[in-house]
Amino acid sequence: MGTDKKRVLVVDDEAHVRILLCEVLKMEGFACVDAVNGKDALARMESESVDLVLMDIRMPEMDGMEAFRVMRDSWPEVPVIMTTAFAGVDTAVEAMKLGAYNYISKPFNNEEIILNVRRALEIQSLTREVEDLRRVVRTRYSINNIIGTSTGMQEVFKNIGRVAPTNSTVLIQGESGTGKELVARAIHYNSRRSQGPLVNLNCAAIPEGLLESELFGHEKGAFTGAVGPHPGKFELAAGGTIFLDEISEMSPNLQAKLLRVLQDRTFQRVGGTRTLDADVRVIAASNKDLAEAIRQGSFREDLYYRLNVVLLDIPPLRDRREDIPLLVDHFIARSNKETGKQVQQISHGALDQLMAYPWPGNVRELENAVERAVVMGQGGVIMAEDLPVSLRGGAPGTAGPGLPGQGSSLKEKMDAVEADILQRALDDTGWNRVKTADMLKMSRKALIYKIDKYGLTQH
Ligand SMILES: Nc1ncnc2c1ncn2[C@@H]1O[C@H](COP(=O)(O)OP(=O)(O)OP(=O)(O)O)[C@@H](O)[C@H]1O
Ligand SMILES: [Mg+2]
Image 1 (spheres, rainbow, N blue to C red):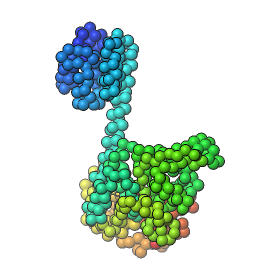
Image 2: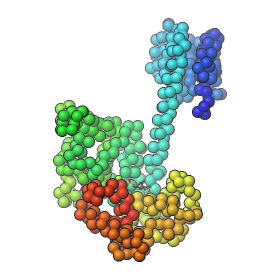
Image 3: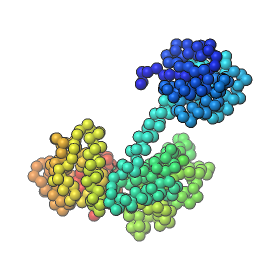
Image 4: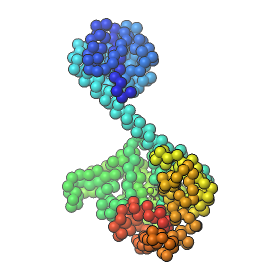
């Protein structure tokens, strides 16, 4: 299709106009078909594909306005440019209000015609591209891609269906890797705000001092380094959704500010005086139990109740093992697609291991294990030996390779030492992954990967 000429339908009751326009268009590399009135034009569009319409307004039988209304409803993606004598300008403007791309007055200027045709087609192809991308995003984050038939997950699906169309604030709780972000996306893309932005902010990933300006923006000179005005995430998310991840990591001071935004639905930039509207739906997530954080005094109870208009609790994978075989099939299919491999199934032995393992890293850990097995495995079946060592032989931390001294090869011994160092560092920082990664001078991503790999857990 890409190299095919774009086809323009020229509609005019006067033969010499049709001939002239088609000549000009052909010289510029377009294909041209023509029609003598509105009715004829619609018949043409029924029988062959047309990329753009150039149409006169005053014609016998069916005029341009009437035909345009039908085209707009039946072929909404085909741009229509009206051509008109001076006397018809009012009608042409009317057509533009109804969605025509533009109008051109007669007598024609060839350059003007070509310029308009090119621009309209360019906009059309960009619009198509955006729509394609939207469709991809929507399928990727559709509820169908959240897998699970366990009672716990059914409850989650039911709640997603209930809250998505509302504007309610949602709090998603669940251990690391249980699918909180996936659920947040599903809610956004199935809501009335789905055409608006989804803006993510991980409260643990941003140093305390910068978080306020990240959230609410700042004015020039608000603090050293604020060289210009800067919109915050609440502004960027206008008309859409803001996803506040790891909300438990927010400082008490900011918790108070966020509470005010949720109450008043307004905010100000740091160092600013203007009051801005927060036209934003808030979805917050936490992998810590916030009720517990309240008891310990690190999280405000009033904020908790504001966020917790709807609470979605995602159970850990070890409490819904019946979802494991479905998840495995889903991840095999996806990895096959991404890697071009053709893994058909998983052996009984391997599946038994997956069913017995406690999954401290939850679905993310399972996803990694399956992806790795698809990549590493030979042949069409995943075998037990294709799974990470840490999955074999029961719970990690009890008899797994996480303990120093386990295993015999140098690699295994080194892994064990590494696992031990990571576990201690994580325990020292209270499982703050940002701090731990900083401390060990490694990336957060690498840390998360290793937590999964060694099956480290918070005690
Ligand atoms: N029910 C599910 N079906 C399919 N994929 C899932 C499911 N749950 C989680 N996943 C996948 O597991 C991975 C982890 O999910 P996600 O990032 O949403 O977890 P999380 O709860 O936000 O974790 P964290 O607390 O570490 O941020 C993602 O790749 C996600 O696609
Ligand atoms: Mg997450």
